[in-house]
Length: 454
Image (cartoon, rainbow, N blue to C red; front, side, top):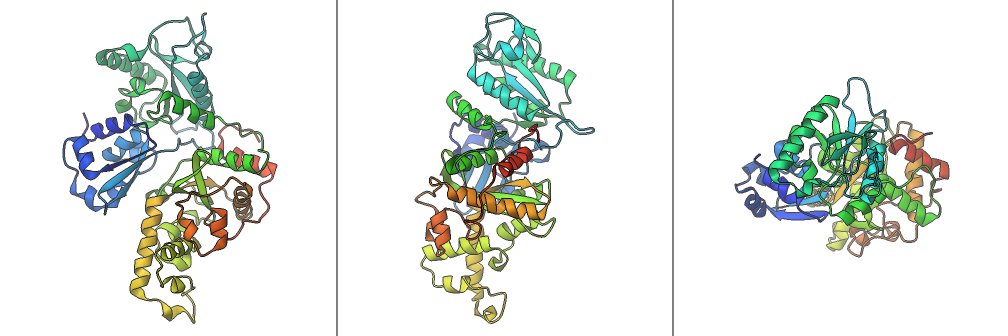
């Protein structure tokens, strides 16, 4: 067993979307002490992208369980939060010289009563049907994980049977997994291909060590939550939404398909131009993570630099987002430095009004809040005019929904800016722009949903 496998196994057994563990509890789970760097450096808990090939062994432990990590060094604890299921790039799935995306869907106890193709045999199962539909939307090849037959092509004709891995012993499941890996090795590259596994733990547990690049969209969720999540993932995006509330929900479901990043992962973004969608811990909209800010950049190639302005470069004059977070924090604390923070001190006559010590403290507080509480997704978009238009259109679309509202505990309630308090967004501009048209909505969907036709 690997050093961090006990942490992976513990998280796989968790049903909650957020799990907070103290360093002491993590050491208890591991049965050994954490390295000193884990207690000293936030970078040790970096999520390091979606590919296991780029992750350290400790990061793979929570990634394999479907979580990402956010550390509170001062508090000596770690928040593990459920990853949003990543969606492969909208570029062609199978490219020369690149690993393919292959989906593995587990069989089901509910079956048709006659021989038929595997994709039809298990269709009476709601979970299988939803999983298969999602698999077809993200992968170039789909195989079934059958308790009786091992790895099965979706078109292979099978007769009904009555076997499940859940009734097998550990040794039997290990033998079944070796059989599947041998079959999988004949039709795929276990090291280069990317495997999306839609199955319960008993099906994938002993496959994971042999597969280098794996995504578990359903994690170890209980049945009801798997079905709920798959319904969201399988939302149809080839039809434009209707009504303000319908449009806001449609956007949230569309954005949910995107990989989620935090401040550690800015360099992992695979493109240089686009729109970023920001989420804040504790904020939800109709059961989904609620968007709290939409932004972009004007100069070409500056997407990552703009995100660094917000999360890494401690200069509120270079980031209105940082300035607005800082205003709310200072106002909440009844800090008189709010008056100076609100000024543009990059220019005369305000340049000499900063208090260096108070300024540095406020910048640190903003960084700490943003890094712990904010995450983001990104939409690739090359044309500057298109980026700016869609940025304001998305903001306006969200703002028009009457049920789009912040939680009672949202930091933005302390903002001195009425637009922020009233909109539930860290935005002052764009709220009253023209919302997305039907064609612009479909344009976004075509960018973000693989296989959608123009």
